[in-house]
Length: 217
Image (cartoon, rainbow, N blue to C red; front, top):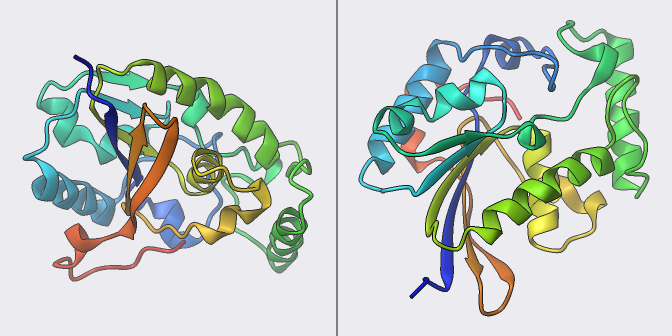
C-alpha cells in the first residue's frame, strides 16, 4: 500500500562567493560553493544523514548539486530539473551591483509585492515565468507517490515562488517566505487531502556550530 504522506525536505543551496560579494547570480551563473558553502553542505549532511531519501531533486546548477553531494554519494537516486533553476535576472547577472542597480532591484521587487508579478527583470524572467516552469516539476514529484521522502535543493527567489504555489498563496506574497543559505523548509504532502502542510520554515539548526555564519538573503 502506498503511504498517504510525502515528506519533503526543501533547501536553498549553500553560500557562493557571489553571495558573499552581493553579486546577482540567477539562472545564468553556474557558480560553485565557496569554503563556507561547502562547510554548510557538510553540516547539513551530518545533521540529516540518518534520513533515507527516495529521490533527490536539484536544479541544473552546480551550487545545488554540491549542497547535497553527501547524499548523492550515498547512492540515493538523483534528478536535475531546469524548472528548479533560479530566476533569470537577465543582463544584471554576474555583475557587481551599482547604486543604480540597487535602485532597480528595489523598484522591481516593490512592483512584484504590489501584485505586478508579470514584470520581468531586464532580459530575464518574471515570477510568473518561474512559476510556470516549476509547475510541471511539482506535478511530477506528486505523481510519484512511492517516493515517500524527497530532498529538493534549489535557489532563494525560486524557492519563494515555489512555496507560494505549494501553499496556495498569491504569488505577490512570496517575500513572506524567508530564506538564507542552506536553510531548510520541511513540508508534508497529504495525498488524501491533496494539500501541502508546512512543518518547519527556514530552519538552520544544522548550521549553529559554524563560526562563520555570513549568509545573505
